[in-house]
Amino acid sequence: MRVLEVDEVRRRVKLIPESSVDLVNIYRSVSAGDQVIAETTREIKRERATGEVDSRRVSVRIGIEVERKSADPATKRISFLGRIVSAEGYEDLLKKHHTVHVERGREVEVVSREGFARFAAIARSARSAPARRLLVLSADDERAVLVLISDEGTRLLRQAESFSGVKFSGYGGTSSPIEAVRQVLDGIDETVERHGVGELVVVAPSALLDSVSNEVKRALSGRVEVRRRTVPASSGGLEGLAEVLRRGGLGKDLRPLADALLVEGVLDRVARSPEGFGFGLKDVLRMLEEGRLGSVLVAEEFLWQRIDDGDLDRVLRAAESGSIGIRVLLSGGEDHERVMGLGGVVGIDRATAAEMGLGREREGRY
Image 1: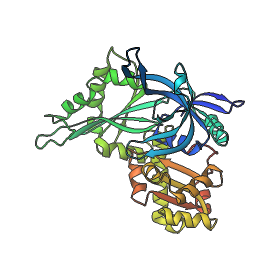
Image 2: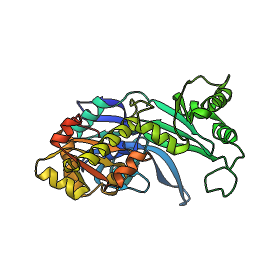
Image 3: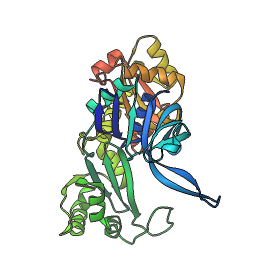
Image 4: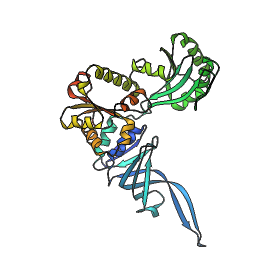
């Protein structure tokens, strides 16, 4: 979440959501009676002197007083419906109903009575600058993938197979491993600049590391400057990336890197001592009611699927108050899929959470 401005007097915050979890934070913080202001489009009708009516869509900065809200798990978009209380240059729209859709990467302003304290807490832990981003090229003698990793999550940008035969949708077939690498590196300079990438990491089996690294150097030569390093793995592709993430080979300073290590540690502990854990919302809620819950892991997809669920709301409110710890695993990574396979939410009792060093999160964002 990028917070652009906080006005404690007017109880107003201006921000840019950078991930779908940021949207969940906004959705849960906005209540009926709050104001949401954003650039949107609106159909404007004007009647001519002849009696004809012109209709056109214009971009206008509209503020509404929220009456109700909704979330779409499929598109990861949140919406607020209410009466228009401000419309710069189009005052004739005042008091009409309008829906403001909030999406990633688009600025939104919120004036909130009850939710401002939580927005202020979010602001204290949020960035004022764009997120750091890392590119990973993971390749072996069968495949090559280019993956973008940041605090917003993990995203597969390109992939290519290096064997002949059936080509699956979304894959490009090439005659050699190096050709597959060259294919995913096509336009790499533009990719680095467009996403603001600070580092490019090559993941490959030891026998291929030098040749793949040389292809990266050739593709970037004289075009763009970016830090580069290599990390060996037993395989390439998404499997090699997952292997490196699990052992901490890419570090842990970005959220997906830290999450991968966290889930690996939790599952290792589950295998040795499962009695300190609960799996699925029913078990986690029981732990909360019994006062045993110390921390929870929640898969982002589960969070969106149950965003208005009353039982999940109880768990999230406990986390927002600071009484338990919480970590939302961003979609796109192996750690997310592993938690989804365990019911979407994993509860960790207080004693186990303390032994694993899982402290309570600061109030505010997840």
